[in-house]
Structure formats: structure tokens, C-alpha cells
Amino acid sequence: MNQQCWCWGCDVRRAEGNLLLAFGFERIRPPADVDGASRYRIALNSKHELTLWGFGALISNDVNGIFLGRFQFEPKLCKPQFDTYTCWTPTDLPPRVRPTMAGELALAGALCAQLFEFISEYESWVAEQVGIGYRQKTINEFKDATLAARDAKMQWQRLAKQAKRYYGRQAARHRIN
Image 1 (tube, rainbow, N blue to C red):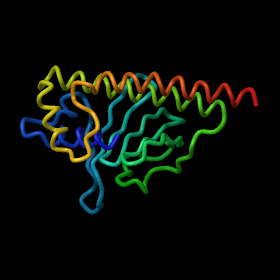
Image 2 (cartoon, one colour):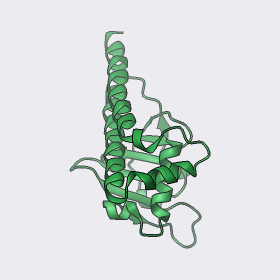
Image 3 (cartoon, rainbow, N blue to C red):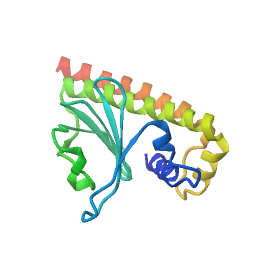
Image 4 (cartoon, helix red, strand yellow):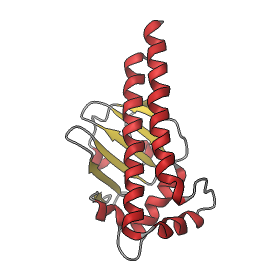
């Protein structure tokens, strides 16, 4: 996730234009008197939206969400019943907890899979729009790179399937107990 956030940051700063905006994200900057990061928001469907910051991603509906931090790949549930327009730092996020009950685990699997599938689609779009060479260049500039640009789409798809399976098994285990 750290590498993906790096790539999104490069996409925002791209000299030829902000790729997140070109994709359809809405940018909301913090007020002038507030120190924090801009957020980017996009509706994924009629129920879910995705919000990106430099410190992570939140996929949510009106009631539930999953936050995945940039530096800690541990999806956490939250109740995004807050004004996301005032969220500029990680400390502004609502309380986040690890999913533990069957329903929470099933929700976590579904939301994580949706997030990872979105990232896969976005990376495919970037390759189509500006070429795979652009993305590889951004990755080459990242000192902690773990994934080549040509592998990104498939790895995020694989991760989506793994999240569904893992959380599905965990949810089933908790229903039995």
C-alpha cells in the first residue's frame, strides 16, 4: 500500500496533469489555516465511495468502511459517520478496529476486495492513458518498491481474491464458534 500511495502521489504531481482528477476523482484541499493532506474522493457505485489521502485509503458507504493505512497493511473497520471534508490527517479519522465477528469479517472481505479491484482497474487505466513506462518510472523512483508496473493489475486482482477467501473463511469460523 505504501508503494501504491507513492504512485498516487506521483499521479497528482504529474507535470502533464493530475491523473486522479483525469480519472474522475474530486480533490478537496484542507482550509488554508489547517495543516494536512488533500483528499481525493470518487463514487464507486450508488452505495460506496473511495477516499484517498497520502496516508491511506477509505472505502465506505453511509454506515461502514474499511481504512487501509499506507504503512500498515491491516484493514480496519470504522463508522464513517463523520464529515470527511474535515479529515486531513490520520488522527482526524474515526476510531478504527480490527474485524472480529462474523458479520464484520464478511464486510471486511467484501470492502477490501472492492478496494483492491478498484486499484487494479485504476492501474490498467493509467497504463492505457499514459503508458506502462510512466508507471514503471514512478516505481523506479520509489526506494521501497516491491512490485513492477507490469505486475500491478494482476497482483491487486490476486489480492482481491485472497481477501475474499481469507475473510470468508474467518467469518465462517466465527459463525461456527
